[in-house]
Length: 422
Image (cartoon, rainbow, N blue to C red; front, side, top):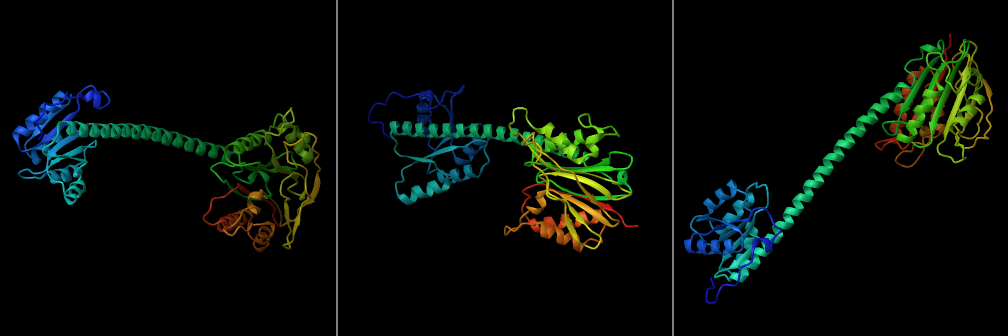
């Protein structure tokens, strides 16, 4: 080491790093007592806490026992060499990074590469100059400070990630609860419309859907049914869909407060009431929906329906022919001046009326081909002997197979009401 000139005024640890409550611990590993004593004196003057070890094994034990983060280690020692100590340190699972400086008189590139490969971070030549040692310590302290700040950032990121995971889990739980509430607003049985039979399909693009449908008695002789598709999908559409469903479907035989018996028996009046409910007073379109509403006499098969922008219902005849119901008016919620018309239809024994959302006919496969109205009609014809609930399940399988591995882009729903043959 260079001692031919006076030692420079030493710095302090506070100058080298962000101030900490206790001095930074530095472990000096060297089998020469005089070197250990000299380096310890320098470290103390610079504001560090110095610990000493006379060999590699003792140094490793001290590292395992404390919170030492910086090591100055001699290369040539009895027992473990400096590079072997470096390799052993890198194999340990310390809770923090340990910065290692090797004291060595070796200057060959191959030696330096060997030391770096073993895990050394820096080198100080022997005999060392005090200024060089101090500068190398500054580098080590800066790197440890960066590592500490990075660790703190990672800790905060983990906290944020954990908080997001918790929030995401809560959202998923809330969505699952909302999905259960929404499904509770859908039919659970067709017993209330006997002797008619019904089948249905409900496939939300997300956990919850903007689609809704139901059927219910509206008088002693007739039952009502509707199929609703709120624009969009996900939470906003589902909230509006569920709200409309609960406000439009009679509960326990009591008509909804904003609808009288006249609207329930008059499909066009039903849609006009919905349109009034959805239209904004200032004329701004905030939400809208397509809907078809109809009434049907279970005993005679005579019915009436009106449509607001919804896909045309299909009348599946007993001979396999399929008729399209007339087109309707504008979706509800767009213009308060929209007009709707009621159209008569009739189901003979063994015939069905099918309503559906455009999520079926707009569903595309991997090649971009739509499961269009022709595919839907072909499936209905091919399986016209199946029961209504079995037919709905066949369509479920067909749509999902058509879509393949991709997620649904829009909500899919379908309602089949059948007048059974004797």
